[in-house]
Length: 423
Image (cartoon, rainbow, N blue to C red; front, side):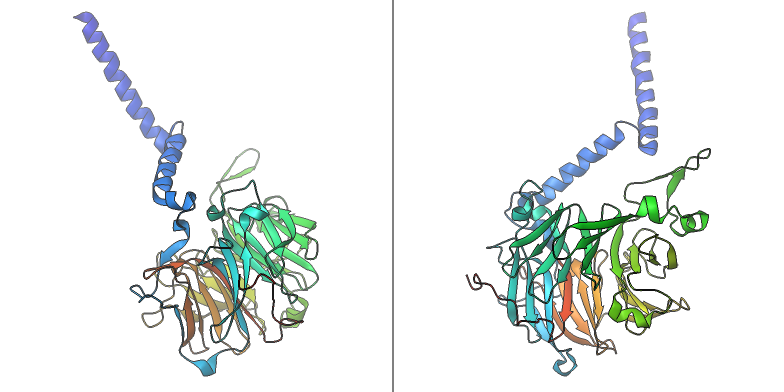
């Protein structure tokens, strides 16, 4: 009897201790809480995306259509104000609807919606031992006047420059993502593993890097405060320990020579950066990392700030959880902001993550809405000029990560062509 009572007390004590430990483990993230959480996340991910990971259906790349219930054969393209269209071409990067030659592609359209050229982007050919083709996504694109392109990838391990047929001209290893931009001086600039990286555009050779954590932030107390974010500071040493991906750098844009006159307070090559988590947009010196200008908000979890010809900066304000995204203009001299365009019932616009925009010479704005697989253009009054949904089926679109408008004279030797076109 005494033994049974002792066993009962032992079991009860073990249960109480297990409950107490489990409660504190969950609160403090002790073992085995991280392992259990990872296992549960993995199970949920596999159950949701197994078709994608087996190459059967690109479920990781499908989003709700803006206009569900479309009839079969609907291309998702419509023009509302033909007289307001900025002349030229539009290149759109994303998943290939056909997926015959490659999972991804960049497609060039004329302003009537006709396909002029397709660059197939075969990630597996660029990174044979890397993640499966449908487990990455084009996120970062630059176009060249000779008909070639440069692309980077979310969850990928390379950046590459491709010729008009999609063949690699060079490949640079590394986790490049979000933006790939020419500096107008023969280099490409991108984020790579929390470092701003310059590559030779012709060869892909890495020129130099500027580290966010080791070079840009540690510039003294004032600059550390600008980049403040949830972190743990060791009281005695002053060492800062950040959480996983605390800043989420998602854009870097050099001030190109053609735009420099509009920004006398900056110089050619200065970098306009976006850090999503602290809602921070800043201009920094490309050599020292010194902050020349910065502003937190009113944008929230923003993407894609751009230098503009009138001396202002525009920002893609995702504003997650609001249901409405915006394009916001800020004057770096006064810090005053103006909303250039925001979503409405008449013209919906909302992407809680990702997103690109481009202010055109006639005042129109080209906007990429990734989370609805849509690209559209509005005029200076906020009226819809044209839109294209990247159709997968009647109710779903393919995620599109970037659209770029090109001037009619962008290509120096005619439109891109490839011997494989039409095959």
